[in-house]
Length: 101
Ligand SMILES: [Zn+2]
Image (cartoon, rainbow, N blue to C red; front, side):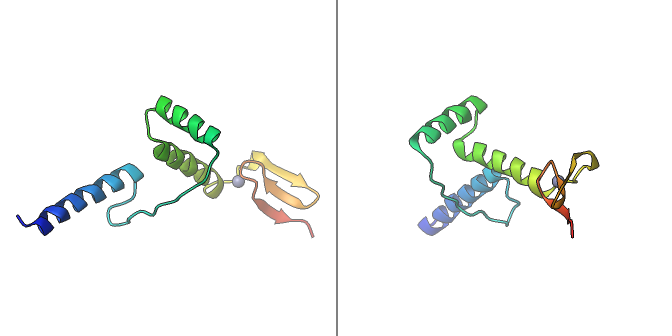
């Protein structure tokens, strides 16, 4: 096996590992997101992630996915609608559902 072949094999393995950990569909690929945080937050996130048994990156992915689903996939349950002087909003996700004229 040539060095190029060996390196390609390693790269394939790395890519599969990344996909497995990010939950990206095969062929979908991933992007890197860098975020800034205070040292105190970073330390707390590390401790919390360790307690969950996952990496900080995995914990952030899970929390962000859950929040995105809560906000973007909200069915706007009727019993959570709020009437304000501006109109009707969803008390679950905060989206404005109709505006008063
Ligand atoms: Zn909603």
